[in-house]
Length: 195
Image (cartoon, rainbow, N blue to C red; front, side):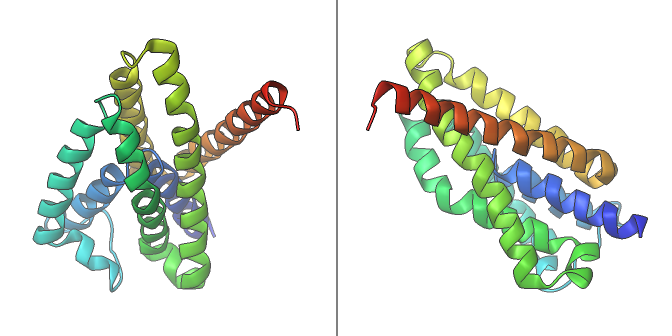
């Protein structure tokens, strides 16, 4: 029972962190599925075990470097967020379903949908908040916000792999924060532009 809860918590944490940066949790899962060599931290079932291949690790590393660079540049980060609207939810779906403990206990379609919704929700909040940061800081704060997002994604992913129950709580807090931020923004928009 505890193992199933830990697996679901890890899946929630990994999918949520993918909403901030798709490639950080994917790369961390790939590395955890590969190392240590004699007894990897994660055992991914097929077809998700391809994530941990050397090709997968190499591709994810290159994509992460590109993502981390373009997300720090004003205007380019908005374009990147548009492209990532498709990638981050898909990464969340894959990460949720890839967890070996979850995929055997939960129907794969349900697991993919849950990951898609989690990562998509966090990404939507990020996309809604980023123009506000750009407007308030005239673009000078984008790089700092992007670094904070990357750091949060890294630590939530790390906790999801090493301490999944705690990561589940962190993911829950992130989702609640995302919902509250979205509602506040919608409320402000309705006050500014009444119907």
